[in-house]
Length: 155
Image 1: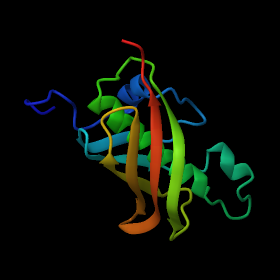
Image 2 (image 1 turned 60 degrees about the horizontal axis):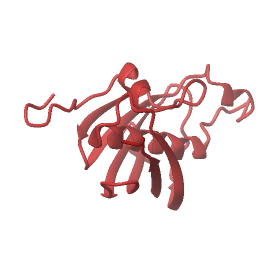
Image 3 (image 1 turned 120 degrees about the horizontal axis):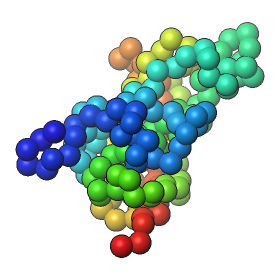
């Protein structure tokens, strides 16, 4: 934790679950590192063959669905906002408002460690805009810009 802000620079699965409402099989972030409140962070998704989407996407060649990469980016941004706005244990919800400029550059599959680099472009209230990049082994897998609305708890 930094002395100035007392906000952690990493989040383990226990802290993630205190911020996000998502649970198995839809919790797509295993940990978060390099947290700079109101600015950026890096989520980590360890892709394994045991995940339910691989029974149908695709049985002969398992590929992590692109929409789930985007969702994992959004969940990572939710952790950034949760820590930036003191939403730990406050049962806040987050909803997509828009996704733009999505590009997929490489397949992601079992055994890959997907790094979800998110950067806040605009935020501070209910609506935030982010730039996200999914990276595997230093190689760009996906990029997108997305907007989310946070249903903040009543004071």
